[in-house]
Image 1: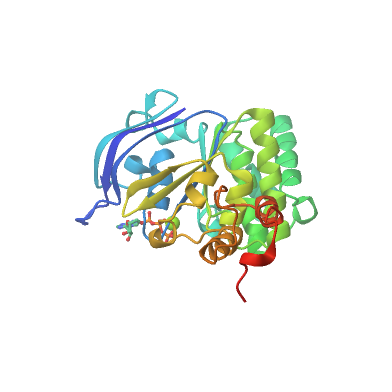
Image 2: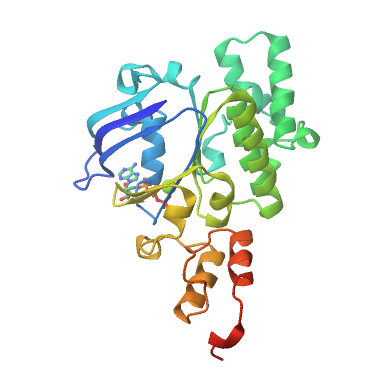
Length: 288
Ligand SMILES: Nc1ncnc2c1ncn2[C@@H]1O[C@H](COP(=O)(O)OP(=O)(O)OP(=O)(O)O)[C@@H](O)[C@H]1O
Ligand SMILES: [Mg+2]
């Protein structure tokens, strides 16, 4: 469980807080998507969950972040990394720079934890397989495509078997087939290991399909918090710098023309959109 107790945080030498009075609880086993415009505080929120704030980033922190009931400020990062895995926005920031192959890079975190060799090999193989990287295990991490590097960054964290995964735009360089593979792997891990996933993602169509809960940040404050349907079809979404799904956009345009069933909310997924349009009995109301 993760708990933010009235958290306000400002980076060093800045006046405006990057997080403002954030108060929320995230239950174990949930998949929470974090949205917001550029600079809204999404990466800062992730860094606070992972304990990088206040251990790595100084600045001014008010309030407390609790992970599994302990205050992250009072827990050393070396201990937090085994509980919370943080996949950075840029995968190159994740790599050690000291390893020659993908497999060695994936093993790096385990070496630091002193895991026995047999177990290490098993865990590395499993993580590379989840991320579809078996065939490039012997290549240099720096010779991979952007999408492969993102999957390796995820594998480097998965080998550590944290209970909480914090993923900052982990699929920004993947095409939709790659994104689906990563999300399906995460979903099955979430089910089999009861992981908690906190995910920053701009592609709202994906969030509608995978997340249980959506947070929208604006200037460091949580301004929307609810189910994907509540948040992604919210009238304020665009104003907050977040693109609604194409299904919501299409249905909203239809509603403005009076051709969306009046008793139905706006859809966030394809099936619901199709269903809504199918319910339209007569084409009479349709204006050219
Ligand atoms: N290391 C830093 N030092 C000072 N200010 C920072 C630092 N990192 C971020 N900020 C500021 O904090 C605010 C929140 O930034 P953050 O990176 O969390 O936003 P974001 O929502 O992740 O944006 P993006 O969509 O661009 O990734 C911004 O005003 C940003 O300029
Ligand atoms: Mg960011």
